[in-house]
Image (cartoon, rainbow, N blue to C red):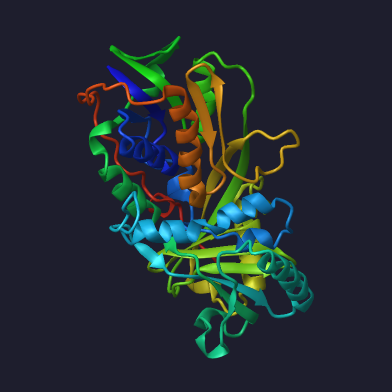
Length: 389
């Protein structure tokens, strides 16, 4: 089979790349080894960040913050069906996120909003945080917050997003056996099938490492950032937002389904290297510390390990934006840093590849090769739950 572009990895980035090439008239095929979104996308909390949370760390990379600030509006247009790809069927869990400052954090408040003020004046945020009147505070935070602000950042269901974006191009998405792949020059052999792409694009997250190795690329181009995310289950109201302490988001909480919270932020990085028993105890303490009114005795807790795959940096710092580059003739490797930046990564990949290919080759659309991948299960669907008291 001959195609213009072969994409490996059925997460947010791969699917958005597939859509970008198809809308420009290229014949592209996407291959997924496990399930759509398996790994980073399905584990993400679904917040379409606009840069407000990241600006609190300090403003060093203005270009990256400005790019991120454009994402909520771009996604909003797609989610409403006003722009391509149309994601009108995606479930939007919340139209906004909160930033809350816990009581006793007045110094943190001054620090955080001093930084936010600079970013706002520089025109780097799509919308300034809006102070929420106390009567409108979420019930969960009424007795533990010193101040609450709202950001115009939507929160989406990641599984719904994957299902809807994949449905636009379902005849070009296949499940393949990753143990049977070999790369010989520009030919990709998988079992008895041979694919001859003009360009191959790797958007498989942590799976890029093995694909690069099979392509004979020995350079260490990727770094991994481990996380240990926390899940709570019980009589929990919906909550979407960040607990901000000293310019850092100690907790990021979303409610993906009724009665379940996903908890990330700094806590996920702090717990990353702890065993589960110690991590559970520490998670309970941290959550109680910042939301003391929450009755943990009525809740179950679970943990899941997550890994962020990123383009390698010289000092192992977190990359400030997306990364896409040719790593060998005819092979592009790409990594986003956040779910919200998938459209930017797709634009960058398209710019690189279309400059090389110039125009579609006029290939026929592919015949079915293998089965269709399903959407990956959510972390809470397979979690091992314990009482959180």
